[in-house]
Image (cartoon, rainbow, N blue to C red; front, side):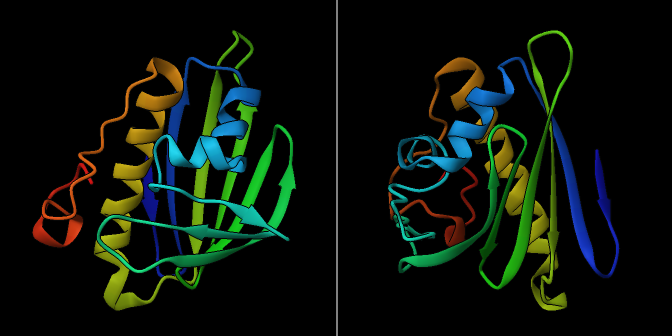
Length: 145
């Protein structure tokens, strides 16, 4: 499900995996490195995201409540991941991003869809969809970077 208005972007995705597994993908260094960035170590509430095609980006963790919520300031926006047990061993994740500049919205909307699908592949199936090749990056139109 996608929703967008002038103040927020909202995506939802269902995982077959438990809320604890989904949370760990967001809130641990190894988890983030499995789908989001080449590495993303956390130190003192700050996560440094290292990408193949972009200088490092530092995000500030705003809230972290295992296994239901992870909130981070990322590329100038506030991104909240809410996790809900689906009652059958899986997880419904809702991402809400606020504060995205108007001139970046189209790219950010597509970017979050790409990140969430890569996350689902990693968490539910142990598959890394990224190409890990700086010459085939998001900037060149590759969605698998």
